[in-house]
Image (cartoon, rainbow, N blue to C red; front, top):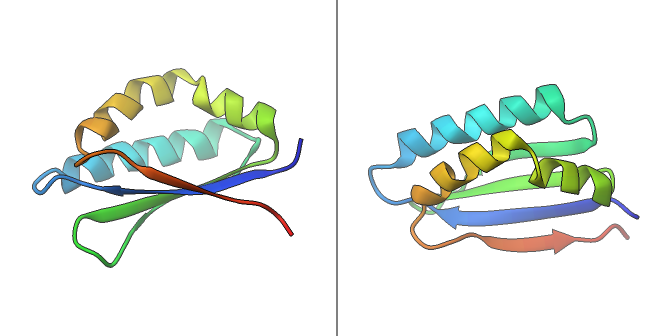
Length: 96
């Protein structure tokens, strides 16, 4: 299957930014060190207050499934979600 790329945008609860950033950095570091099928995985601060995004790109569907099934993601995802005001909005990008 073709490359899978998306952006997920989210709003962090006021006062939870530092905690959120710690979890995001830990996840970024884990992905970079351990998930070779991940082409891009980086969190960004958006220009709107308390808004963040993560850009994720996987070589193929198997790489995405490996990431989604990782023990580290299973540990950190609920902590990240706990910092959010609502949920995230995901938008997929398809190569031309």
